[in-house]
Image 1 (cartoon, rainbow, N blue to C red):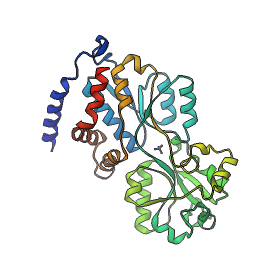
Image 2 (cartoon, helix red, strand yellow):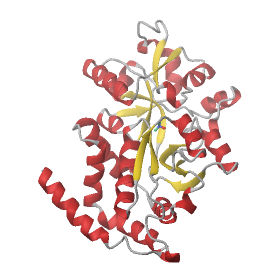
Image 3 (cartoon, rainbow, N blue to C red):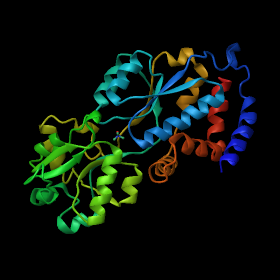
Image 4 (cartoon, protein in one colour):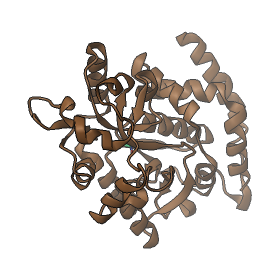
Length: 324
Ligand code: TMO
C-alpha cells in the first residue's frame, strides 16, 4: 500500500514537472517562494478540502503551509496576510463579519467552494416515535423534556455547536418559546461520539448540526423544519436573529465561499487563478471525510488519494492557472 502510493506520487511528480515552466508575463511559478498559508478550521470536511488544495498548490511548485485556527481569529489573520486563503467558509453566524471585511476590501471572495450545505437542528429518525409532529419545530413545544440531561432537566438539552463557531441555537429556542437549553459541544468528534452512544441506546438527542457530514448520513439524521408555515422564521426575525442567513428562512441556501487575503492575486497570480477555479462537491468531500473519521485515515492521505484518482478534474484548473 505504502509502496504503491510512493510510486504513484513519483509518476505524478514527473507528469507535473512539465507545469513548472515559464508562464505568461514572463513569470515563473512560484512567483514568490514565501509560503502560501491555508487555514485549517475545526471540522473534518474543511480539513480535507484544504489538504486537496495544498497538495495541488505544492505540485504547481508552491511552498504551502497549513495553519490551524478557528473562524474568528482566521478573519483577522487573513486581513493581515498571515493567512493567504481559506477554502470553506460558511455564511451563517459569521456572515456579517465576512461581508463587512469584504466590503472594506480587507479580504476578497474567490467564489463558491462547491459544497452544498444545510444546517439546523437534527435528531435520529427513531426520535419521531417519541415526539409526534416532528420534523415541524412546533412539536418541540410538547416534548422538549425528552431531551433533558441532568444539567438541563426539566428542560431539554440542545447539543449546540462548539463555542468557537459562534452558536446561536439558544437565541432561536428562546425566540420560539421552547424549553431547551443549548449547551456547547466539545467539537465535531465529541458530538459524533454522543450521537453514537445515544443511537445505541435509542435515546432522544437533539443537536445543532450540518450537512454534508458523514455523521448525518451514517446516523440517518433528520432536520427539524424551523420554518413551519413561516411562524418560526417570523418569531426569530422579531427577536433580531439574522434569519437571512438561516437555511430554513433563506429558502434552503447557505453560501459557502473561498476567501483570501487581498494581496494573494499580486503575489502569487497563478495560485490565485488556481484557487478561484478550485472547487469540490459533497460527494468528493464526503468520501474523504468519512475515511478520516471512521477509518483513521490522515486528512493529507485522504486528499492524496483523491488527487491521485481525479487528475481529469483538477488538471484543467492547474493548466489554466499556469497559462494565465
Ligand atoms: C462549521 N460549519 C461547517 C457548521 O460551519
